[in-house]
Length: 530
Ligand code: GLY
Image 1 (cartoon, rainbow, N blue to C red):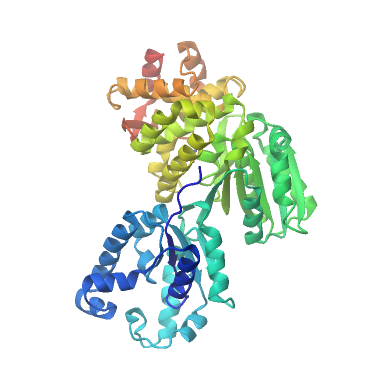
Image 2 (cartoon, protein in one colour):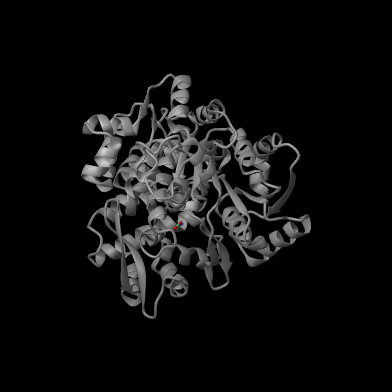
């Protein structure tokens, strides 16, 4: 199911051609065009300079926010050109990214100045040196402009050429991770290898280092081959690792470094992660360290990597002392989620990935939790429409968490729900007894029952989560003996302090908080509920 066409918002500095291009795009798509400044002026009954002079810029921005709320609230897929400073307000920018496809048009300061025929009606450029003011504003707004679904340079191209690029974006299913200059698009597709071809063409790499595993290559290799068949004469190295968590080691990282360096990788190369969570974490970490960092594109092929590991920039590998103990935050340049990959995913892997979706919903998004419950049987059967809806909503929920706390100094730690006990069970089982998501499902239920017992989670929520995991085909039980035997791995967890641990706690449906809990109390509660 392709989602309904969304509104298109053109953003960028004044004189980048937003209105001219916007009208062309609207004409081609057969939808209406709206200039936000004109709308605000009409509502206010005053010109923009008059609003600035009589009410101040802050009130002008509020007027813009109110206008955007009502324009994007009606669900009509029109083209809207924003004012140059509209996206400087964070909540406006973030809300717009969730409801429209945002394209930033760019131009150099000199080009902008040559295009601004008169400063009348441009209150932000009234300064002793409009050139300096332009450069200052461009620099101040660089991060905000970077938070978009696509950026298009307007240098040396006609409005028609720009418009045709935007029209080509209209039917794409794009989400945006807004992280300033490290922002990136996350694209959903359905059996569309050409989406990867276009992504790579836009990134213009000098070469591509594909990291994949033998299972993914066997079942999905044809998809990758058809994506790469159309990128022209680009040197490509493929590094195939053994599937599974046991590959997530420094030795595999060293192999990627060695092969990439022997291949002659340079700073303009792209590392392409083609696989699930293990491949993505390894490829991302290798990209973050090769030549001090080359770009990485994540092409996720499992539910788990689509909704969790490919998005948000956590990369790394396991250590004998525990899982994911060595790593770095390194954001990808793009993420591509093609639902067709899930058609060959084993049922057990699909269910394990859905555990991460439930986890995200439990601590951040009550409506996502309701939606998973509504689609549970379809998800368990692997119905493509249900998966696409839930994957998109889960990724959007994760985007909200990561954009507000990229480096996990607060809210992002909520996404570790179920991972303290889950990781311990995985490590205790030698990473062979449980898939990661299976361990997360068991860990989530045990942690929630334990925090219910401690009065931190409302009664009934653990049972609700347990029922949902089971409907998705996941086991939720483990024995007190397994909990006791896996406890040494809890003690090695990176969230542990001397005698306590910061634990994500479900405090309501779709709500969480990080609580410091004594390790002894947690152990006793976990043993009591199993
Ligand atoms: N997998 C949890 C996170 O990305 O924070």
